[in-house]
Length: 171
Image (tube, rainbow, N blue to C red; front, side, top):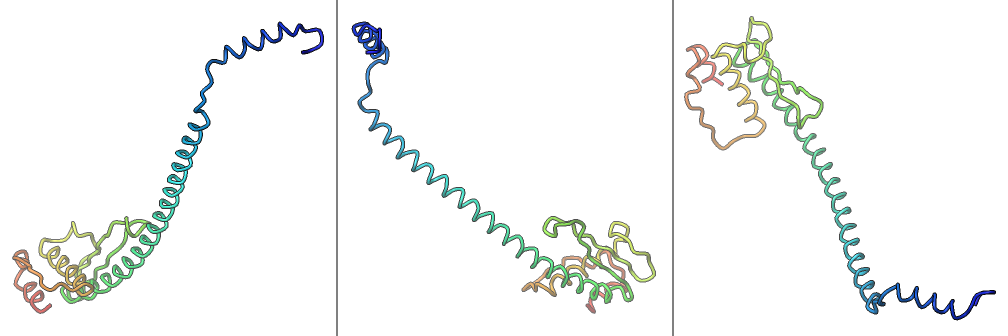
């Protein structure tokens, strides 16, 4: 007992505090162990998920880099083939492909065409026959990079005049 304190009052006070604490949960230690085990399990699962996410992001980055490289290589080949094919269909004409945007995988592809004797222009401003020949030139430029076992061009010659049909057949 503290100096000057009545031991009986002190005992009574402590008994009252003990009574107010309520019943003792004798399973608390067991429950704690179970909860801790569950917490540790969930923490390991979360850590595994975080690691898997990092690995997936790394894989996506590698895939995007590979895709960009392959796309740009293929794009360059098609671009060169288009210049050659367009030049054959439009003797003396010029065409080019452009990427419009910073990310090649998200960029728009634009075609500029200049049939012989005309100013460079977008496809929308070409005549129907010139559009058809430009599309044919692009299609053949793609097939030169990635051949197809067969290709059906149904009525591709419909918008072409006789002279352009001959050039198409020669190609």
